[in-house]
Image 1 (cartoon, rainbow, N blue to C red):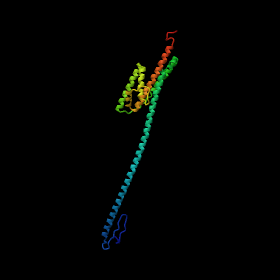
Image 2 (cartoon, rainbow, N blue to C red):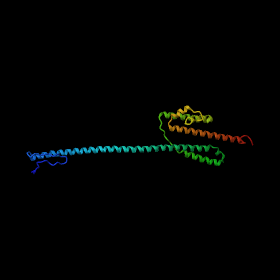
Image 3 (cartoon, one colour):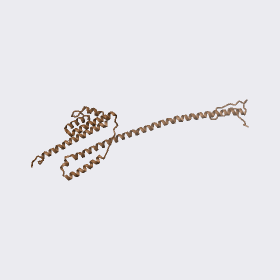
Image 4 (cartoon, one colour):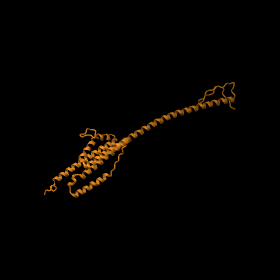
Length: 253
């Protein structure tokens, strides 16, 4: 039923080993068993080859994912670096706007309190005063807030520095010259170049303990106060000079 079965070496299929069948024992049953064993070994070898191929593919795939993750990490890091530059630029722009706001308010106040406004007619003075008040209100509506990250020590240092300046401002109302000298001393503590006035060493130690952004704001506030004091003194001198020159005031007719 099986037909003539070759008794010599069997042909080798993929992964099979040639098997020689002896002429003396070539019964069909034995031949079938031998063929089954050969086929089983062939399947085993092929399965192992496939498993090894998959393992190689998995190793290559894992290596590729690692490279891809590294690339993505690099791209994310580059994006964060660009965002950090934009954040710093945003903060610098906001800080510049804050300075501009303070400067505009200072200019409006200078016009409101300046002698030039007193040298015009009442009708013009009223109109200009209304315009100045309107501009002041619109400027005050512009709110710019730049938060500063501080630790507990920096918070305490800022509180101390603010308290010192507030006390000097109160003194200005009673003693402008003495308050101005104190302003110059604390301002000298905030500049890097050698100032022409004595430095308030205690205030300097306080300012050094503040955050860098707070140090800039403290210096800017002191400079604004000094300008306002100087402008106020000029206005007082002008008004006093005009009073001395007014014949009616001196009792002359």
